[in-house]
Image (tube, rainbow, N blue to C red):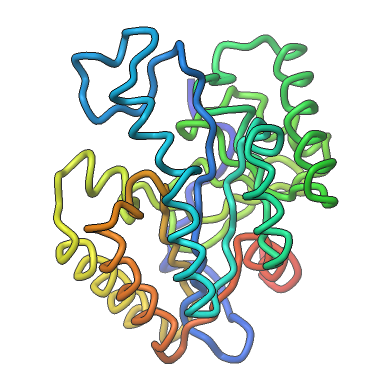
Length: 287
């Protein structure tokens, strides 16, 4: 079947996109705050044990994020004046409430990211998915005091009905379709796609490609430089996708801190959130 969710739109044929204050690049930090079930395989550092239950090696590696990594990341975000756009598993609200409290104190943005990163809604019936999404969104709303506006599926998964079901729940954008440097409208009334990177993403860079901290820093600088160069006439979006159990390992964290410093001090960058990008685009963009 052909894709019905969005139309082809070459970036060279769009009306100019303008960010607040004349900024050329809208930048947000996507922080994945996740919970993993102990008896299911998921993102793994060592494949040979990933199907064991329990799997202390890989589960412990992931569990470093909420126990240690996120707190190291918070220090850097605070130091550089950056608000997190949190991709939040609803199970986090119940199991790691200290993280939610820290985010509320800092006015973080909360995008729904499924119940946990061990359950994917792909393959659910419409009724099953509708109930699942409502539970996830409701749990996050109760925990944070605000209804999420955005959605990122665990492992960026959807069904063909996901955006429509999310619109029913009052959400206004998804981050699953990593195919653009600008937001765009979906063929679902009221729904946008907001750029989210699977390349400028610590899991891909460090786990998938085994890059080093200096490699990461240079890649982030190069990404910003290229987008800034291209955005003379029309704004671009840069996301930096982080998982605290990966990027906030001690030997990598210092390079993240340098990357954030570089971005925060770069001219022509709007330091913002995924919510604010979606809201601005919906309000101002033509077409």
